[in-house]
Every structure is written in structure tokens, then in C-alpha cells.
Image 1: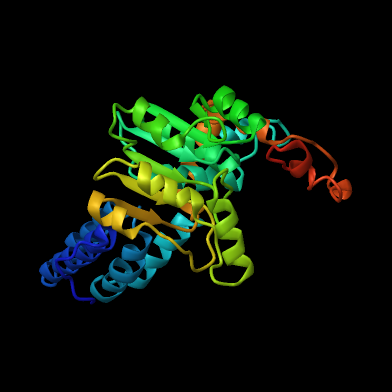
Image 2: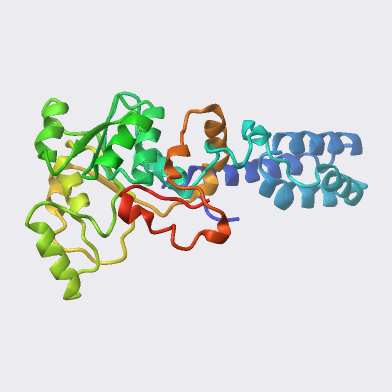
Length: 322
């Protein structure tokens, strides 16, 4: 059995291991009990651990085979009774997969993960850099998680309009307004509580830094352009959180580490792990809390998909061929 320490880095694992210890103690206590008592204990533990498949298979089943008079048969009956794990029915089951609103795309999972892992709480002010599909979903997720205000930042008029209309977020065009000054103005001089960077390694800027970063890339002195990350760090309030949701490949230059330290910021990032969120997001899609229909700018047969996947450059909108 793995050693349990005091770090508490993975509460779920620690809780499960403690439960394993508890289960083994229970079985140790019934070594001298009657067969009926042992069988009742086994059935009770199975009921208790229906959500812990690993615990049941690795602890309960071996103990049952060892302690029960007909343990092999009891375990076999249990396995046959449980059969395949059944998924909880979702309201999405009744939806037409071809309906415009049915599109639980990558962007929904990624955007929700950004807001969730950034620790958005009720009453927070959240700023999201990027109004692409992922940035839009991060803004909507922040609203559903209780944020008091959500402010999205981009320069493409179509994306800004889409975000404001479909996501319910405030918007800033960074080519017209100074982002840092505007965020301080809207937050009483403090800055946002949470800043989500949903732009990535090819960030654009209307300032001289946009000449500097591409030049460094071409000379292979850096791999990515962290323009939006820099802005998010400088804009975030003291003690706030910056979550890097955009894709980055390697090294960046002029990273404001001093601002991170002096402001006491929490900086996080992650690759999208959608399995954690899929069941909940499918229910939210079915309930109408999340809207994805507007992300499909064109609907074409799959056999004619070539030539339609580049429309985002011409129309300056997110595109999805279905």
C-alpha cells in the first residue's frame, strides 16, 4: 500500500487510499464472525463503494473470495449483476445530433476547463484575452460559475460582436482602447481577479512589441509570442490568478516574472482534459445554458469539406465544417 504523506496534493487519491485501509480493517474484524455476518458485511461494502470501482475490484473482491465460504460465487454473481457500467441518462439523449445547437466541441471543454481551473468564484471580475471559440466558452463558463463581470478582449469586430451577443460578456477592442487602463477603470483601480489567456503562441499586438516578437521567432531565439500572457500578468490584481489556456510550444522572451512575484500571482496552465467535464457540459448544452450553434459558420457535407476549412481567414470568424 502506498505511503500516505501530509502534502494533500491529491485529496481524491488520499481519500481512496484511506478508504482502502478502512475496508481492510472491517474485513479483519470479521475473521471470526459467522458466514451470514461476513456476507452482510460484503454486501454493505459493495453498496458503499459503487462509485469506487477500483476499491471494489482491488480490495472488496479479493477479501470476499478469501473470507466467504462461497466467495468465488458471490463475486462472480456481483460482476455478472453489475455488467457494463451504465451512464447516467442525459437530457441530451433526446436531442437531434444534427440540430444546430448540438456541438459539444473541443472549444466548450477547453473554455470551461480554463474558467474552472482558474478558480472563478461568485463575485469575481474575470478578463479573457481572445474571442475565438475557446475564449468565448471561457467567458460563458465564468458567467455560469458566478462571476460578477466578464470582460473579453480581441480586435476582430465579428468576434467581439459574437462574444457580446451570444456569451453575454463585456468586450474591449484593444486596437481602440488601452487594455490595462480600461481594465483598471472598470475594476476600481484593482484589476481583474482572474485573467484567462485564450490566445496562445501566435498572439498579435498593435504595439512595437509585435515587431520584436516575430523577429525573435524568425531568428529562432524564441518559439512563441507571449503578448497576451504579458498583458494578463500586468493587468491582474495583486493576489489574483492568471490561467494560460492558449497553446504554447516552448520558450518565450521578456516574461514578466518580477510582476508575478511582486504581485503574488498564481499562474496556472493545463492541456485540455475533457473527460472530467463532458457529462456536466452535455447536460448544460441540453438545458440551453451553453450555446454553440453560432460557432458553425458554414454547414457542408463531409465529402465537400475541402476548401471550406479556410473560411475563418476570409470571414474572420471561428469556423467548423460539419
